[in-house]
Length: 85
Image 1 (cartoon, rainbow, N blue to C red):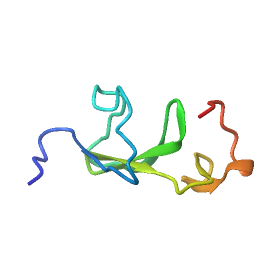
Image 2 (image 1 turned 180 degrees about the vertical axis):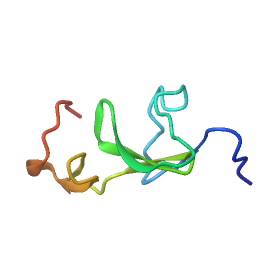
Image 3 (image 1 turned 90 degrees about the horizontal axis):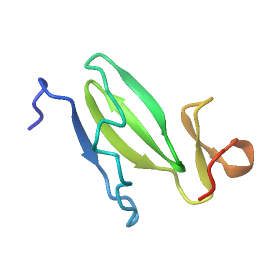
């Protein structure tokens, strides 16, 4: 049961990936009226979905990185990733 009065987060464990440090400490702010994808700092294979005040941590499939230009996962060769994994 989600409490709409609080900025909440959902963490998905996809393929054994652990939630990165700092994820739950206000790194991302989701507005109540926002639906958006955000890159995860320091990890090109992770991204956050903000949907109506709830944030969900997601992971791209193997061989893909999150591409902020398209708000979707894309081939590693096509994404400029400043971080090394």
